[in-house]
Image (cartoon, rainbow, N blue to C red; front, side):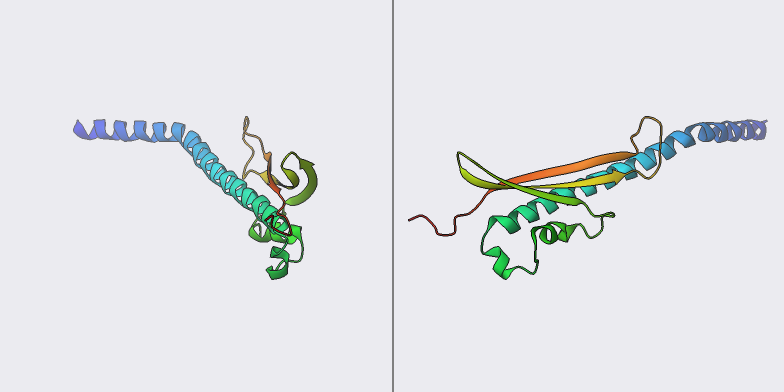
Length: 137
């Protein structure tokens, strides 16, 4: 009699596992995609900051191993494919002239689930005032 109950319980556990497995798989893949999008957003933020810092200081170009703002900005994005796009703009406000660097990356998820977007655009902008070439006394 005890043996019959344990066989019934193991069959019920197998059915419960079969019912919950798709939900667990969805949570696993969603967690992986969340980690990937978080990593990509940090990388894009670092790229925008690197580009702005490269263009911010007039003397950094003399000591830098990068030949352009785009090359400096994409230094941290070697593992993102396709590479992000880098745009820059200059302007002026009450604090003086500034440089604005925007890095944009099109992120694609691992799989396509209903209700979960398959592509997400990650865009970060860093705005810095340019340093004067001659310090004020």
